[in-house]
Image (tube, rainbow, N blue to C red; front, side, top):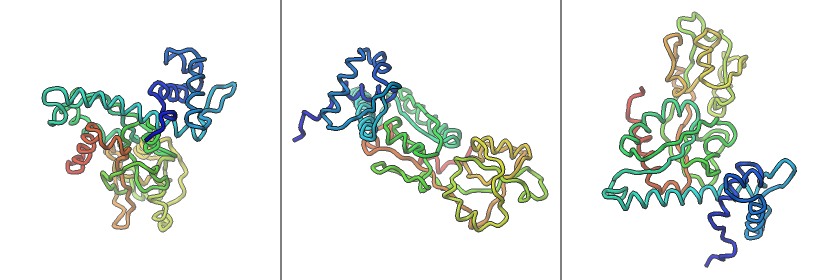
Length: 304
């Protein structure tokens, strides 16, 4: 049987999240409707229950310790389940509710990298919200660097993330993952250029080097990148202006216009796997399950 002396109440969880999000006890007090001393007392009580220091205090505010980061991530995820609990129970109580395939309601928080947010999510969300008008998707565009979209899910800031799978940054332990599509890389260059391979190489930090690195080493025609752009959209625009060539995945090329030409790199071309990541608890919620179904159905529809 669990020791109730170590259990944190919902309000204690809200305090931990607010302090982490605002960066200080005083800053967290206002949104919570508490005094600074009440916030400080709550944090000290949580630390005593958990037996760990959760925040480093300083003149500039409060910053989560490694133990605090874990505690705050769990707090966000637990509080999110309270929200889902209410939404799903209300839906089930309604006539023809979710248990009978009826409408879903509430927020659905999604983290996605730029090209997925532009080209993969919109049609899936359009179909999802047409079936469930009470569902409110909230999409955050997150760069696929470092923790990326999977890190947003692990930290409890997103219910589901659209992520690149199998790259140099592994999906955090404890998350569930599923592949949605395998997209090839292609050479993109100004249309009609007589020798596109002689052009400067354009690249961006978010490009999945782990998928292409071994392949690139075998290509003696590929120079070092001379221009490092902010994102794939900027790279594509620069190619359209005739400033260079690039090696880009299929999702990034869905917005390509007539000013560029896309050349297949052959049977040995690199590919990247795009999929979803979610937590075990969110994988059991009806809204996340419905979104995953729509994303999987997307594979069988032609690209817009």
